[in-house]
Length: 196
View (cartoon, rainbow, N blue to C red):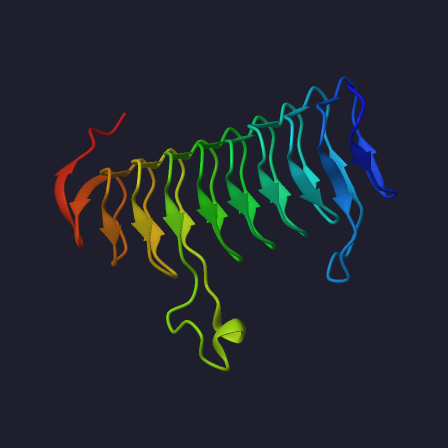
């Protein structure tokens, strides 16, 4: 580890975890319900903030200044790019790649081997800024091996099917079936992915 970072109590680090300067790990928050753990051979780059209550697997990597809120479950071999934000109560499977400047809100679910391009935005509120909006949040679910192109936007509660591809800049307003290629605003099916 390199110096000039903060690690709060109730943080469990595996073996060979590298934390660069200006990181804060295990930030206390009232809503967190457990310690923060980070698995073996992880690499936390400069300026990253990780809150209390995260359960993070081995071989985890962040870019600079990633922000990971509380109570997330993150699998093995996950990378989170520079300036990306993962809100609380998110589930991320093994081998997920999240590129730079991605926003993933509460209650989203990314299944294993999904790939999220740069500047992708997930949403989780169908009726933002209403008095009851926080009680009705539903994040998107991204299926196994799905690929989301750069600058795409995924609306609340949308399911992106397994092995599907979302074209760059698309706005996804309806569920995407498995093995589909969608593009546009609103996104429409334009092809099929060859099944392996």
